[in-house]
Image 1: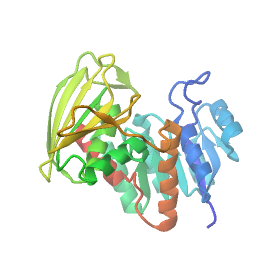
Image 2: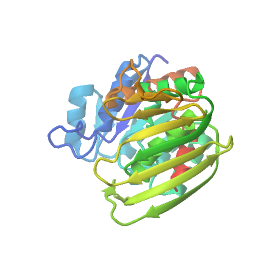
Image 3: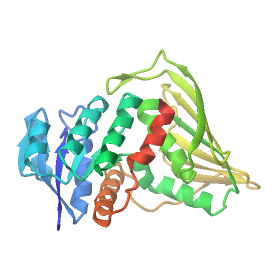
Length: 313
């Protein structure tokens, strides 16, 4: 097969464009398929047909549908991207798997409930479908280089992983995933948390906590600590603590810096590579297509994403 046939479910307008109601993640997915020589978008589905038409004008796609079930039944798709709100994910993923697709790339968070998250993965495993979720931080240079610095021994042995973000459900899924990424996918033994439910916002129709503190212990005795808060200015960062120093990778002006024992100041580390949302999301899509071609598990496999999601629930 020269090119995999790709269908997109959810074609919202690009982020910050006129009429946009979300991040328009389908457009980021489309960049990944365009960057892969082995994939072609052939069909689009959106409840608002004008959204699909606008997407088609930018990225192509031969057939347009309002009903994604009809698209799945008619198009003989190999890959489906699901770019909708989390409460729709389980039904769409399961329908795509049952329609016979070979791979599904879905937006995060996985689902509003742990049962739905597990069921999606189970159905896809039973049918041999590659299921991935968009934890794109794994392809962002500041986090990749942070792990490389850790592995090089720049801060000694790993002791603790820390993170700060706005909430557990939407943002915590990224930072818990980064804990596993930094810690070489070592499984967690236990997690405990104190959660203040009041004062939080609503994200994707799900009520968020006002603040929370979560602690995780991994099988190699590394500890994880995640703080979430709705407070304005709460920094989005991860911190790797070693026996001889610390590394911070964060969404800020100086995205990567290191402090080593014996040095008085933090040192900013220069980065190379694309840190943009569209660029990192596209790399995840390219990896999925390549994994399907090569017969391997993709970097953003649901087996990894389930571990982060389990800590949330």
